[in-house]
Image 1 (cartoon, one colour):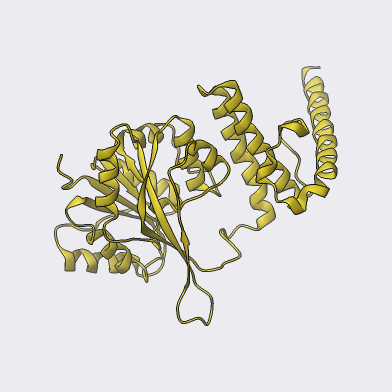
Image 2 (cartoon, helix red, strand yellow):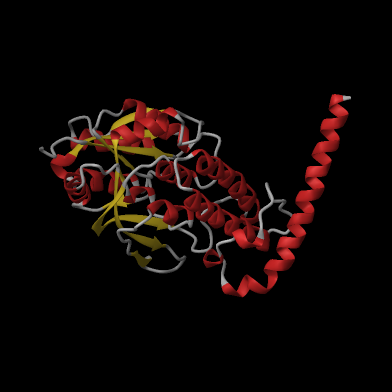
Length: 326
């Protein structure tokens, strides 16, 4: 099968005018494998639209295709972009990240070598921009062919969204359930990829560094305050728990996966003492490989405190329900 014109690249954009030329050039450099570049602007207040129009005029051939979906957020822009896409494979790309030459060709070869694959991923670079430095600090993230990709992604073995290439059929199934959840405020890409894994998607590794994730502050991955972010993380992981319980996993795998999420709860409560756990679990159902050993002495105190908070919250809910029934 020819690789010509197979991939739709979907880019949500908000105020990334300075990066758009390099982002689009990286797409064009993919060559014949590229079918289209779809940019959905979310109401930028910089000159993003003018830059995009200049790029389209200079490149010709209608690249990129430009749409506006203002004020609805990045996930709504992604969903809108997917509705316009016609490629057999989907490349998600943020407007300030890059894909490198050869990415699509290498990952499409991964699909050809593994006909049952739903997603192909590779290695990626993280460029950290430090104020005053002439060049970003580059970190190479080497991945591997994991025996259980679902376990890896639950344990937050994260990759930049640009790293993945999705088969369209999987993207359609995820779109039906709005896996790019417009109401999700944090970890949007983590939710998308984790739901793909929990749905049974097959992830295949193709070696090579083909994407760049740009970070402007090495101590933050979100504009949301860290402690508030942890609250949202617990809400997100409740979604994962429900997926695990409904999924066609063995009882042993379900226990392993939930133990990873329980470890995330302990980590979150270590930093945010005001959190209340969503459900009780036994200390023996914690995957301690996900908890740094320096936290071990505090775990009994964290666990006891959260169990008391959970019991108090449950009792309050029951009282409220009883009053409501009366």
